[in-house]
Length: 114
Image (cartoon, rainbow, N blue to C red; front, side):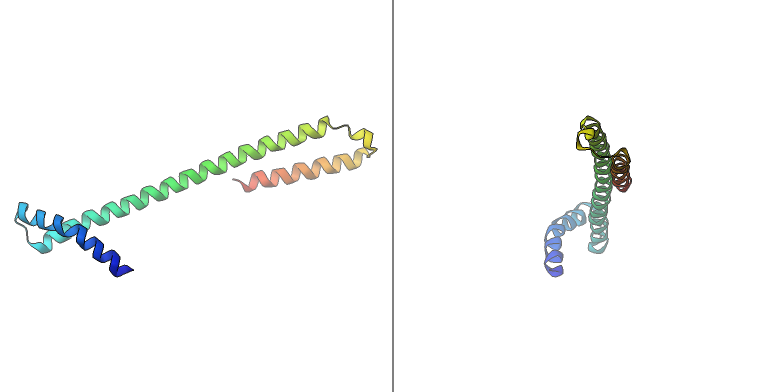
């Protein structure tokens, strides 16, 4: 595989090297160095751009996840307030334990998304 990549690069770069050699009257060695510096600069620049874009999108994803967790947290607490838990004959202590456990769970999920 590396030989195939090198062969394709050589096929692409060869005409550029010849063109620089003819237009500037530089030696083939110097023309090759110039072209390789340009090619590797473009490759490294593309990698840097891709990595920074990936990191930015990851940060945006985490922010959106945090917003979704907060929305879900508010929704679930609102649902718990709407449910008439008194009709189930559950003591206030158990209800508070359930609310606290749910609140702690959702807070941990929210902290995980940071």
